[in-house]
Image (cartoon, rainbow, N blue to C red):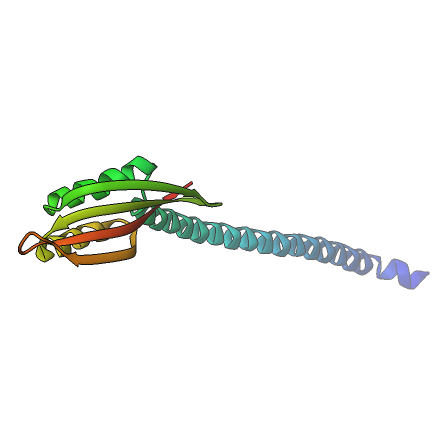
Length: 160
């Protein structure tokens, strides 16, 4: 017992040091865990920023692509007729047909016209701007000199 009383100050000091070491260890571990959580949150925020930038880029690309499509069926017919007139095609008849698909409408325009070959090629260049597909094309020599008869089956698409 005398030994305990003789070294009681040393024992108390060791207990206090151990107590503070335990407290410092708990605080340090808590700091490490919070630091890791903050790092994880920062990584998540960085990933969200990257994803947001990609989504914005995709939205811009989507808008660019959608500009090539039409908004309603009559717009397809009007666009083709306007480009035909600009290219000096003499339009005989225009028939329009509509087919409903799951994600889009397919508009078929059957165009009968008469023009010079040069004007016909000019017409084809003008309709390249939009998403129009030439499904069928018949060219026949016309009775008018320097002109050809065209029967063109064109398809335009409307995204729903």
